[in-house]
Length: 175
Image (cartoon, rainbow, N blue to C red; front, side):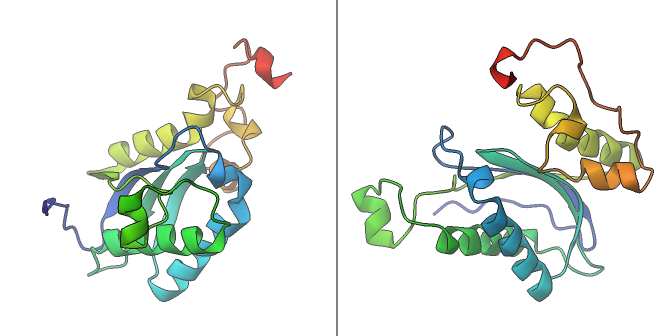
């Protein structure tokens, strides 16, 4: 079994991308309340700050800051995925291999992580998170995507409400 070298930065800030196994599925937005509940449950047991997050139909991006002395983001991520998977109906096709292991086949096994190096790196990753629904063509402006901390950042004065928009972008499928 491969052993992946993960960053070990106690109290650090990290950027993650976590995706569904079948990218055509829309489970994360269809079951957004279940995903939110999974995050809440894990944060109660293993606290961490969500600096930014965007939930898209098939993946999410997030920036977390862990408590001082704690660098275990992998367990938190695994617990969130497990809680979400257990809370939604089993509709996915399971290969014999997944079925034998008792797995659901919802999530990609791997995830992308990046250690946030400084304030500029943090800002760039938070901006990436908030702009992602525009990048993927779901909305014209970041403020139009409901499943994002962008709204919280606007309310707290971190960024203006008109940030992250492409008002002239052609998105006929949104009409």
